[in-house]
Image (cartoon, rainbow, N blue to C red; front, side):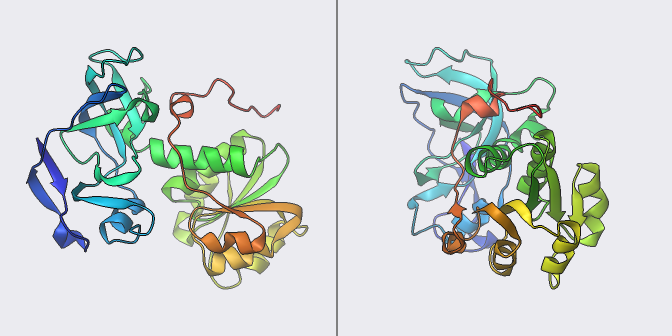
Length: 273
């Protein structure tokens, strides 16, 4: 099959398009004809070797973790999907090799959900990683509740923009950092924008003098340090970008596949919860 792959770490120049081996479909996997695959920051980080300490690489590596497509063949132990079903998935394995930038992907059953009918394949492909990240951090890690104030960094980005919307859905007040050019976009999502950079702490304090109940950090570094000083008593902080969050009493989180959430979790919290 045709795929994009790289045989060594490096910049965009190491990417090549050509033939790679067809994927093998295990008993609890599903062969998916790829219709669209999203590009996420983790893809270039993996390609440049920044994840070498946590992910083994079996070259050549086909990058990509997000996918939308059509089921071609379910594994022999799979009864949840049939040929022709439209699916989406955060198809991450525990090593780098068999990604989604290819004609076909053998997706473990645990990574797949049905594609929302109201989304195109292109729209749906952009949902799994960022959607799961926003959901899991807000619900499982920060346990955001109605009436709380939440600070979301990079609120106009992929993860951040979904976190803003989910926070608003939960009944929280959401303050989001963004460049001034993206302030209207953040407002349109229901958030209150603040410009990041020097003076961020004072700007957030101007909106939330008593501090914020929770911080969702997607940047790390100075933004994380400033954020830790903005927490109200009993405030919580979580980061997907900087392991130093543990030094501030917070939690580092790495998104996990969960088809129950991707397809619409039956226990989805409401404003009234």
